[in-house]
Length: 267
Image 1 (cartoon, one colour):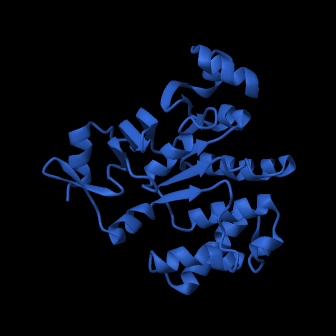
Image 2 (tube, one colour; image 1 turned 30 degrees about the horizontal axis):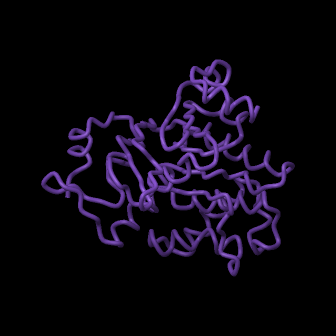
């Protein structure tokens, strides 16, 4: 197994990089979805990815935590491969147990919440820490109570997902991801399934997380959030990064004609 330091040195990974992607490609049969993504997300920063449907945004996010296997390229999280080990210059898939251990450091929040419908809010939050981290029931519950307070849902601990609004369910999903104490949080269009009046409560939780120093990669259509909270704005189209930079600058003065066309439609 290659050490974190060896991996960083071999691929030139910056010391402050939490997510490091070089020439990342992903194909489904003859369909090339990602065509060579180069991206570095520093620790404690917020990278917002925008672009039209079908541009590869969500696929790239799923590659970060190895929900999708790469077709080519290199992708490391905190200096480590998630689904592979490097031995003698070649990549080999790791066993499921090690994959689960590494994936536990990468929180993911989906647009459709993905809560366990047969479990209460509290049970949703304590399940993974107990099963994957080996945390005791008492410790898991104590942590969950703190997290529910953080997302403003302390009074919902014993409710079931069906008893909550969409915005409340998404805040529970964020708390559940945080319960694993992840190194980085991935958000896949977390507000796209919500009624407009519920979007703000979820974005506020995300703003608070950003201010606390959580590393975040956010696929979003919320341009205002990207402008206010993002450290880096990435515009993707047809499997490539067309433009990236400081969010306010990209939004106010896009250099690519394709970026200008997209922003003119969504702003």
